[in-house]
Amino acid sequence: MKLYNTMSRSKEEFVPIKENTVMMYNCGPTVYNYFHIGNARNFIIFDTLRRYLKYRGYQVKFVQNFTDIDDKMINRANEEGITIKELADKFIAEYFEDADKLGVMHADVHPKATENIGPIIKLVKTLQSKGYAYDIDGDVYFDTIAYKDYGKLTKHNAEELESGARVDLDERKKNPADFALWKAKKPGEPFWKSPWGEGRPGWHIECSAMAMQYLGETIDIHSGGMDLQFPHHENEIAQSEAATGKPFANYWLHNGFINVDNRKMSKSLGNFFTVKDIIRKYDYEVLRFFILSAHYRSPINFSDALLESTKSGLDRLYECLLNLNHIVVYSEVSDSLEEEKAIIETIRETEISFVKHMDDDLNTADGISDLFNLVKQINLSDIKSKETAKLALAQFRKLGDVLGILHKEIQVEIPSEIEKIAKERDDARKNKDFKRSDELRDLLNEKGYLVEDSKEGYKIKIKL
Picture 1 (cartoon, rainbow, N blue to C red):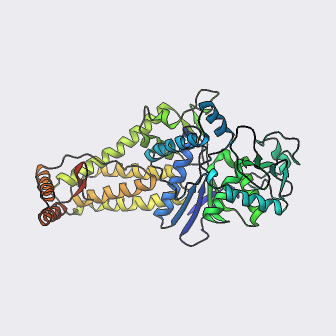
Picture 2: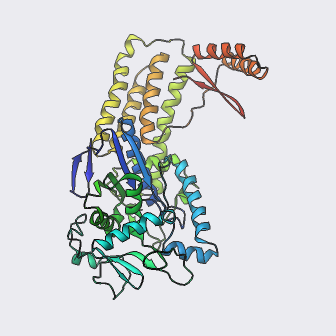
Picture 3: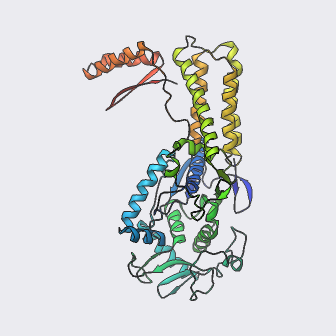
């Protein structure tokens, strides 16, 4: 498996630090608003990488933070007349609502900056003791000139990076590119006690502190949007490696931008969309499928026409699943037929091709093409047996799960005979006749069906 490492500007063979275990950190949202489609691309892409690594047999420890204290948080909370914690809690809940429906799995840890002040202060103290940080009236800055490798991610030296640095102008700093590790408190702002006085952490320091707190001093993969390369990731590298003397991350991965109707997305152009804006018209799964339809490092153009095309493509996949389900339910042929050997081989070869493409720097676009090619071959074949249909369904579900798609249940009319057995079983269960209930469950299982019980009642599913 090869991944494109921004640090080396090349595809590199992926070799984790610990065999079969991957330590991965992805930069999460600043929780002052609903997240937009650019954020969604980041979350979906690296959720897919996580899924694929697990598919390949790795154990993955995945950490994604919430920035819950910064200038945007403070300003938005003041505008709404609520506390910063109330604002954070609100939009963290909104994050999970959208992320869950996009198929983005929860991280193993979702640390918050405000809950990791101790590790942050400890890291800043280490940097100061080693001569990489200095204190000016309660503000602590990282000395970019003192760290000789500053700029190695973006391949520029500190002087060249000064003009593009998104930093506050402060003539007290030694160098214009020096960035805040700790900020002295201002009137009306939340603060914490520290060796430099009451204040709060800078933006960049939280990710270094939390990555090391939960994953270790050197991690396998650090990911985020391309816009985070400078200054955020550049600063993370500098402060982390200055503190430990070790590489911070072995692989740096960045997803490309989203353009809207061939123009850069921005609030000033009026083409800025949150996920909640999009799902008023399109399903969450359509948006995920759209994001995965292009290579993650390439720019992707967003438009209604492209989303409509994406929806049609996803509908085509589900139509194939529906047809296969019909064969499973209604076919009287159980075992695969001799003439179905060719399509069975195609079904198996689809996974080989899919892995080849995904191993090549997470090429989801070509991985999706493999699914459409399988649909084409199935449509050209005359599948009659339950066994072959089940094999095809299982393949779609397996590869779809890697991509985080094709998870919806396919509604197929259940034969009345099966409905009758399921109803009889449910009655036996309610009457506490568990022996009879188990017998009928086994009978359904023999006929190729499963029954799931819940508070709302039972549900019959086709056994794949």
